[in-house]
Length: 249
Image (tube, rainbow, N blue to C red):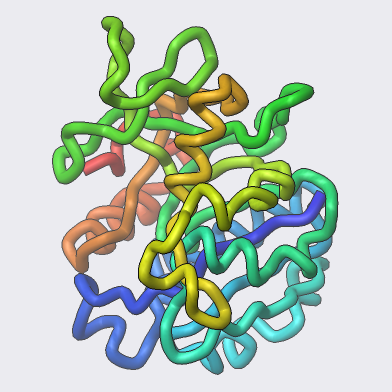
């Protein structure tokens, strides 16, 4: 299996920290955020990892090289001066990812989820990891009903949960992107720029997206304050893994 790490964002809410350092290369617990992902993927046996880049793109190969120090091969999907959003970024990286299901992780999250447990059911186009809603995102993103994803506005009593930025995808999810996205402003650019969410919602409507509720350590490093909190948690030692939500501020 191959993996994609989303690392193209500008990290505007993290400034001035991201003025000269891309957010995934910021450190917490003595390591760059993206290195936590690389280590977990390497332990899982993933050997080919694609990193999409835009903001300060040259900093990634300078810091990470070819991936040999983690016994993986890193491939960089350069998007140019403006990030292509999640959907456009995944589409541009598709040739590097191949035709088999692949893992995709946001480069600016930390999570102790066991990636080995994340599979894709026959016929599904995606399986996403969800977490309890953090204070900065109380509404959540989806409902989880018997391991199937449902729209956040769907009927029922299932709890609303937040997408953790971790999932496994069948590349055919992208096949119908033009029809689903339509004439959205960035879709007509070259290369196209569009979000992945509309494709996921279209697949959810067909019952083809699964979900898993992770109750362990997770944080979305969206502000300098949350980066500092994560640094404190990771600096407290290996027992942070047994403290559900400890970094989920």
